[in-house]
Length: 120
Image: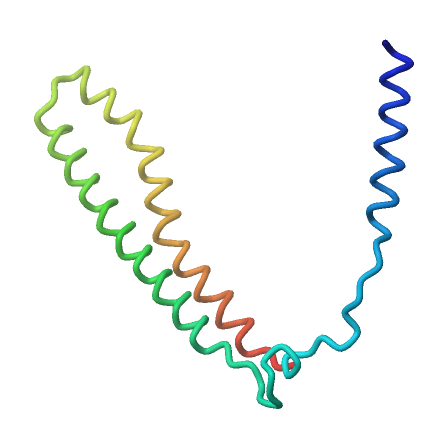
């Protein structure tokens, strides 16, 4: 059994090595040849679509985190001493998640602003 496993492992490594050395015929691959004309490729539509998706996800995340905070606050005020202790345990992961949601949009905008100012 061990010998068969060694042979199989060696065969797998040899197949992987030969599959990595495949010939690629992509000598004249430029945006003009893909586009079919001499025009440059515009990424404005993709960029605006991505920005819209990020904005929508950020707004939905913020709205949901505020709604959950309101529900947890009401349950905390109405709960008994044992329930309050349980809500305190669930509050820390919620606060970390809400901070990540709020910070994610800020970090994404900073990274986008940094890379959009870099010129080729």
